[in-house]
Length: 212
Image (cartoon, rainbow, N blue to C red; front, side, top):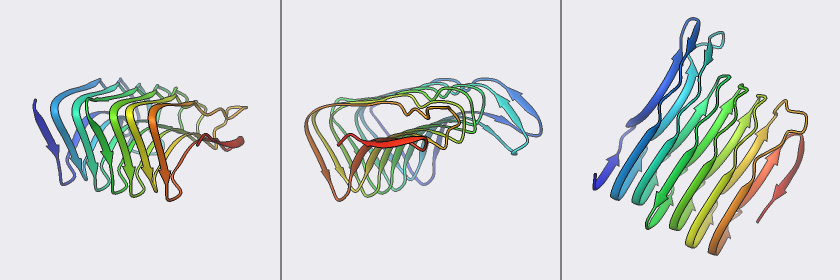
């Protein structure tokens, strides 16, 4: 496909959902190849393993999200997300753009495991330029579970620019003894952080480590 636009709350993805009991099954992989531009406005690309009620139990892993495009534009709380609430693993997120990746308006790329035991997948992003503005976020977190976050790797051949936005890898009130967070690897020629923008790893059971 040459161009693709997701607007007005559109949803594109895979899910495994437990409702009124136990569900077992993996969410499949999601792969997209958009040669020119992928635009996501107030919409979500996702893979998830979830439960309908707190008492439901779901056993399964979320698949990978693999996006290849010329440019990626995310606006108005757009999301690319991979999440599990289960004993399974969260899949990886791979985004490869020949030109630019731009996030604005509280848009987010994230992978998370909530109340689970599976490993959170890695996030790997490649582009010529990466820009995050207006409270946008790239994150990889374990929240309230026994899993550990994966790693974040970003390769921007020219510039990474963060304006009032964050890149974070964290373990939020995890029950692992050391509360380890994953790593963040940045490779770029130019790095700009303004208006309290941050790149950091964090764990509630260890001290915050600010990388930049």
